[in-house]
Image 1 (cartoon, rainbow over the protein chains, first blue to last red):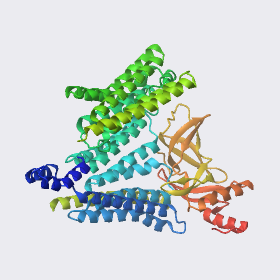
Image 2: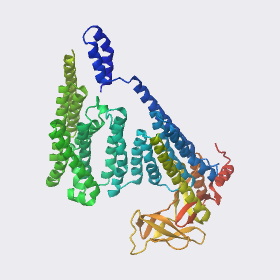
Image 3: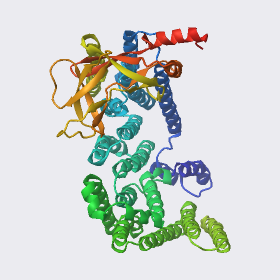
Length: 437
Length: 193
């Protein structure tokens, strides 16, 4: 819901009733329809954010103070001290749970502090006893013992800290092959929390924050699966994952008032556009020639990564099917990316030439840009039209700079792209002004 | 009301688990330190930094190579037992890698890293000695100055018990590192900031 708009409407209603434009009953019906504009909500959010920031700063402060490693203290004193942050965190969390209706700021702050305190205590014991360097061995118990905090305190900040911790753990463990799947397995327990948070209002601030975290997390986490493997896996994997995120967002989370309120759609569409843009470069496809023996070899060498990517491609096809069934053909633009990537790889392996797949993706990015422009014009959305022009401009710049054309032609092309930007903005502005009463 | 007590009960169980893990780590290390046999491992300290655990001196051991055994496959990341012996000067060296837990108390669990020219490189369960933030770089500098004078006498005392190892103290010039630094400072004419 557009809160700014509703607030403006409520401000206008008394005047409109006075002037007889709408009846008092109609005004009341409008208020009933849109519900109360919670003026106190932003204050509550600000209190929660400052509570969480406070807890995180105190937590990090304690870690730094104790990381100083006071040589003057005996081993036994340091051992006792290392348990203090954890006991403090548990004390605060226990007190919050004891309250009959704890404020969100306390719940979130206490949970964030406890998560940090848990890792800090284990780190300090490792410091006291000079335990070897394994950072992953330090984080894993912290993650496992921190997970229930998300549910007991109902904390989304703890859920986000947990997801960040999983990435840090995976980065430290430097997984290869099947082991990389454990990154995804460890993240699954957060899913019910996201579902619970989004159950009442999926466009409220808390689920929106969580969905941003999940979408961005998936982007980084896919890297752990595809980083050590043949190039064909990431070439198909990234477009497939972003297509799944974008299509799911378009189907079930598309009614948010702004791009910020539609995290899945925003991250998915941006991810598909960027990965498709990367695939317009010939070098990316040329690298396939050096990296192994094709799709069958990729499946044999790293079945786990290949299966994950195959599952993502199938999921994107299924979601594209749902879009078709619900008669939302525009959304199929996103769903086409993984299929095109598979086709591009097959064409490359058959012809050993990067030209055909690269030009396929040039055409695809151009089609994405056209779709953004048309939808932007139709819905009078300046951001979308600008995105379309930006995509076209990026394509022109990339193709002109990697071609043999002279500076004069390149210069004219850049001027044309710039003029396109300005003209589009002008047209959309005029359309919007005309649409205003 | 009942739901609140259930949540509080579950939280109490979780809190016990959260305390239990670090306490178990402490107990395990203390047992190794009190019951373990002491070995001297020759080392060279260098000074890096760990975001969560602070400053330390990383230890580079001479005794982290074990002779390869023909017919045994040493896969990277595999956990094995390394048998420990003392050389003529009383320093520890690893003599053999075995799969099953050996008899006695002169062995520890290590992780295979790679094989090179008939030797297996292993990751020892101790590779750093934590120090105060401003002391760690000073320790590294003092050590290298000491070494330039022809000394090769930096070592750690490690307690080993039932395959577990706990680093007890870092010695340079026959003295614990803090004592060595204090002597180094006074002979240098410098004082600690």
